[in-house]
View 1 (tube, rainbow, N blue to C red):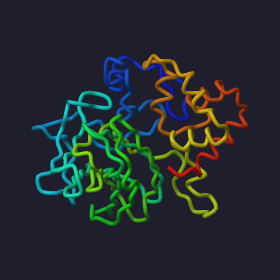
View 2 (cartoon, rainbow, N blue to C red):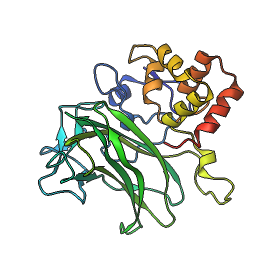
View 3 (spheres, rainbow, N blue to C red):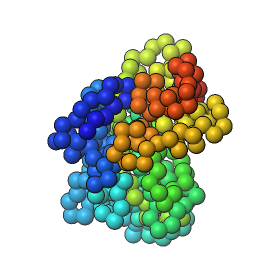
View 4 (cartoon, rainbow, N blue to C red):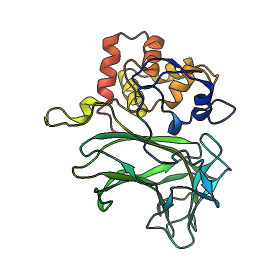
Length: 295
């Protein structure tokens, strides 16, 4: 198997490592286990939800506000990759209940930039809103410091949907935790969560000059890139999508569907460049524009 880590070069991966990366017979990549070459390690413990004990996903606990009767549990009914996901089930599929879960603590460096993503899917019925994701920050004594809301009331489709994000750790913090909510605004009684990733972004620490913002340093997300690509020319995303090989184990298919952050040298950007006959300058302009696109 060959892979191209974000910002890196294509590498051959031994079967033993490939077994950790690929989650099922269709060759679907498990982003939470993809730690190859110069790619930063996933800091989220059990982000792929595969470690289970007594029907519970290890490392993921109940978070307030959770209505009495609402539950979090492990499920093998659906999973983005692998065999298990975390199920957030409200008592009722309306505004009378909510449920939330929080992951284990993750070490962070103050003022450093981190990138992450969460895959979520509604069970039985989709919801127009109700998915919240937040990062909680703690000091060196693991005392709560502050919260950064990442997403508020996102829609929750039936299909697995990636929610990528970038966040900067505040000054004075040493740990972080990820909170994921199926809120009262959701009409999806149960929501599955899988493949949670939280990685340190490359080259984004120690920023002192206010003119050199994190936004100028780190790569845009896949969603930002595709929005900027379409803004640069109507129909471009459709053209690229149609050119993606159908084989889910193909390197281009994997890059197209599972890239979290887009860099000019990465497989996804280079595939887009070739497909649309873009120049290096045109591709660079699209990536630059993508950094300022709102998710």
